[in-house]
Amino acid sequence: MAVNSVGEGRYLLAVLNSETARQKAEGLQARGQWGARHFDKVMLSLPIPHFDGSNKLHKELAKAAAHAEKVAAAVELSEGIHFVKARQRIRAALREDGVAEKMDKLVAELLKAHAPTQ
Image (cartoon, rainbow, N blue to C red; front, side, top):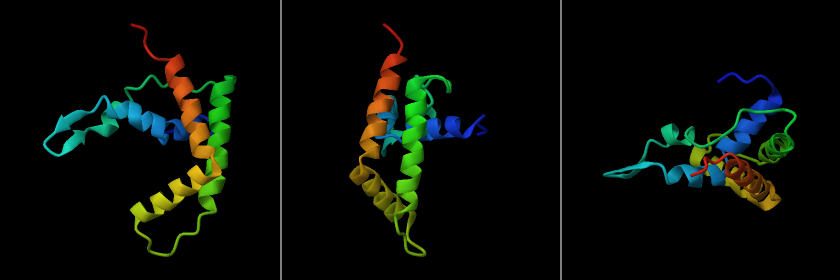
């Protein structure tokens, strides 16, 4: 999808790739014969606000995503590595660096602040 700025793109990457968002979406998934289904449909049901470049939390998420890009780019991956193995190595590097936990905390704050009231 098109974004209006690099900051907006990074903000969305941080939110959509966070473990926090994955866990929140998991609770919304339909269950079928082979387990949870339709992850792609429920992920966008989360209360993710539109990017606001003047919002401190949004800027922090974009900054964390920029750092995560650098960490991920530094991970050495052999030619022809299976994507699952590559993803595991990159996620491990993000955890080791601490940026994964930082993004998860920021996303939790974001989703909590925009959760519908009951």
